[in-house]
Image 1: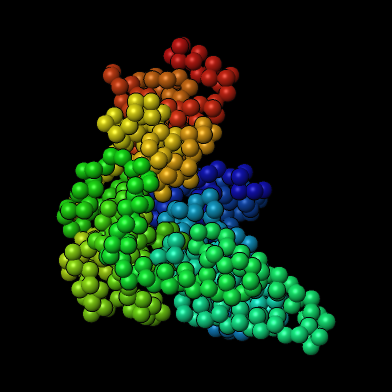
Image 2: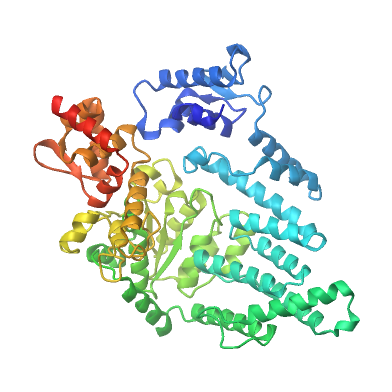
Length: 619
C-alpha cells in the first residue's frame, strides 16, 4: 500500500512518530503536533483511532502487542527494533560518518537512504521541518565528501554530486569549489567560470555577500592553469590532451562572450576578457559596499523604487521609518510584507538594512545580519564568520561593536518566523543599544511557541488589503485589494502594488503576470491554498460553496455543505480574518476577490454546481 491509501491525519500521526522515533510521544504532544491550533474536542479519541488505523493497515494480522507503534507510558513510540525506518538508519550512519571522516561507503549509504528529503507533504510543519533540515545537512555533507576524491578521479561524477549538494544548500561554497575543480579536471574553463558565477549569484541574491577569498583565488588559479595548458604547443601534449585542449580553447571563447549587463565589452579573445569581466564585477561589489550610505547607493535605490509602481502603505511606511523601537509586520501570504520592507529599504538605503530569516530549513544562521550590515556599508564578516565557525552566539563585546556602527539605523528581518533563540537574543541586544528592529512573519499565533515570541513588540502592524483610495475599481474588485493579486492582474502602474513585489504567492512578482488571465488565476488559486492550509477542512468547502453559489448566509452554507453551524461559524471567522471572504448584511459572506472566486469555481463541475443549487433550494 502507499501513504495515499491512509487518511491524511493518520499519515501525519505516522510522520510525527517517525520523525521522533524511539522516543515516547505523549498523546497531548502528538495531538498538538498533528492538529496544532485546530485541536478537536475529542483529540485523544481521534488519535487512538488513527493509531489503530495505522496498525491494521501497515501490519495486518499482527497483534497490537507486537506492533512497531508501541503503547508506552500513556503515549506512543515508533520502535525501530520492530520495523525498519530509513530515517533511523540515516541518523545512525551520520554518527558513523562523523567518527570516520574517510569512510566513503558510509557516505554512499547516506545518499542511498535519502533519495529526497522526508515528509514532503508536511514540509513546513513544526514536527517535520527540523527533521528535514537535519537530513538535508547530513545529505549535503555526504554528497560533498563523495565529490571531493572524485573531483580529479571521476570529475563527471563529482560535478553531478556537487550539483545535487548545491541544489539542496545553495550557500555552501565548498560545493561550488568542488564543481570548479571537477570542471577544470575535464578541461572546461567555461565550467569553472559558470560555477563561480552560480556561487556569486546565490550569495549575492540571498545573503548580499561576495564569494570568499578562497573561492575567488581557486577560480583564478584554475583558469590560469587551464590557460597555460591551452597555450602549450599541441605536439608536446599526449593525444588525449590534444582533444581536451581544443575543447578548453573553445570553452574559453564561449565563456568570454558578454552575456548581460554585468559583462564587459570584450569580444571572443580567450580567457583574459572573462577574468577582466569578473574582476570588474568583484570591484564593483566592493565599491557599492564602501559607498552604502553614499549618493551612488541612494540613486540606485530610488531608481529601483520608481520602477516598482508601488502604491499605498504610506502610513505603514511612516511607522516603520520613524516609529517605535521594535515593530512586527504581520499578514498572510501575499499581503505584501516583503515588498513593504523592500520599499522601506529603497526609500532610506542609508538607514535601513534588510535581511531574510532562515526559513524552516534553517539556512546560515547569521545570514540576515550579514546581509543587513553589507547593505548599510558596515560589514562585520570576520566577526560573523568566527561565530558561525565556532557555532556560538555573538559575544556582548562583538554586538556592542556592531551596534556602535549602526547608531540610528534600522535592521529589518523579513520572514523572521524561524529565527532561532540566539538570533532573537542578538536582535534584543542590538535594540537595547539603540538599533531599531523590524521583523515580518505571518501571524502572532505562528510565533507563539517560537523564540521570536520573546522579541516584545512596541507595535504590531497588520497589513490589510489595499482599498479604493489606492486602486481603480476594476482592479480592486478583481484582486480584493490583496497585493499579490494586484500584481498578478498587472492592474497598477509598473504592475507591482502595495507591497506585492517579491511576495506574490504564486510567483508573480512586480506584475510578472502582466495581466495574463491564466497566470493570474494560478496565482489566485495558490494564494487561496496558502492562506487556508492551516484551517480546518470546512474552510475550503466554504470557499467552494461561495464560489459556486455566490453570496450566502452562514445557515445556507451549513445546509448546502452538510456542515455543523458552529463549524461554519469558526471557519468563516478564519476566512474573513485571512481576507478571503467579506461579510455582508444579515450574516452573509462572499468572496473578497473575483480572481479567487473564479479560480475556485473552475474546479467545480457544472453537474456539481447544479446539485449544490438544488440542495440549497430545498434546504
